[in-house]
Picture 1 (tube, rainbow, N blue to C red):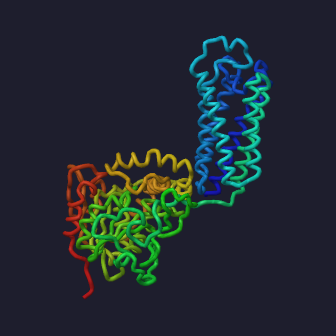
Picture 2: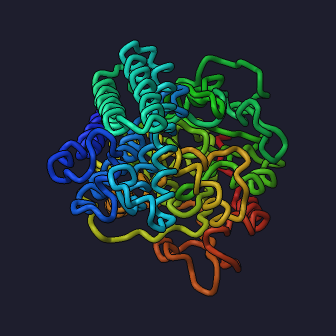
Picture 3: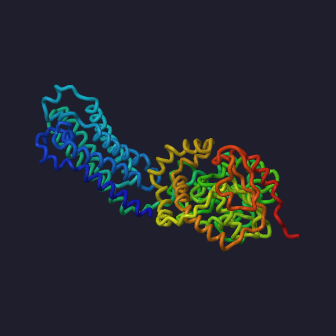
Length: 524
């Protein structure tokens, strides 16, 4: 799918180059603009007959250029060049929105008129756009180490110098400006062709931490509680055995918990490695499954309270938190298998605490692995819709992880991610998790797949009974949680507050409910 993104990005750059060259037709449609001494931008001046055509062409050219940058998958240390190219596209769009009032150099009477602010905005955006595209050409040429790109960069710089010199000399500005725009357009085509033949196809956006065998990632503050541990409860740093002999999403004891890279490391993206897992305490096992878009640190307070008497296992699903993304779309059976891989080996049983859509995964795990479950504590379980699966869900699930690798997803996440997270949860983002594009794309992937997973859960309910284990359903407000009706024999607990923050506002109560669950059964 990453290759398709390259094709789309390259196509956008070619479209931008073609539309940006619409001035060639202006030599025949608008002879009033001097070809030798007139700016190309004068073709779109308000008093010219074809101003609408050339303004639309420039606007679409700028949008295509910025859109192409947004679709380019992230590559190490190229962000400055692509940012400059995106700025060029947006400045081109701004120049189209704010045209010249008149043909500045071609019309002698233009200088004697009162000019609007839009006229000066156009001149400013034109100058800034030229600086931006030259910066993009130089920065990307330095990263690509291509003599062809450097040749176009040198020609673009030379043409810009000629434009300035011709303006000061008051002759030949039109010729120099047209040569400059031609070089820029040809370089855009070259950049598109380079994307098409590139062998550097990254995977998903790297997580925010370094590889770690459970516990918090190096360089990040430790989770709340009584200390982290590796998968089998040993102190961190103890290499332990090579594995536990079980297959699943999680690695064995002492294994790497994720292919994670530090923030700003600039490494290429990768989808390899298991989920990011944090374990605390010792004793009966408690496995926590977060809701839609949730991260492990949202459960710090609950885990810290339980870790005094229990072994608490928290993890991030693919693409969320510090876990690398997965090329596979979300699936109920896949998430149930992930919980089974993280649960203790038989005959030990585990209490599963889940929230929102995570309750679907917990229920599926209990139905598929009844001997592994000692109890369920379900916080605001999401209602299971009875509508059929979405026709495009499967295909969308395959290409969404690739979108999370793009510069556009990364820029959008960094602009709105932390503030949106604070608005929804009331918490800060100390690990910078929600600044990563892959996280928001993973959330979208789960949301798109929800109807498919709901259909899987309904079929599972018809085929596999829920084991006879204690089930506690926690809701908020005066009514039961939307999914509470699916557990007729469960114990229901109502708490005040917002559904989105139940596990954040009532961490102590949730921990007490877990402690009240009968201890896991063990063989004598």
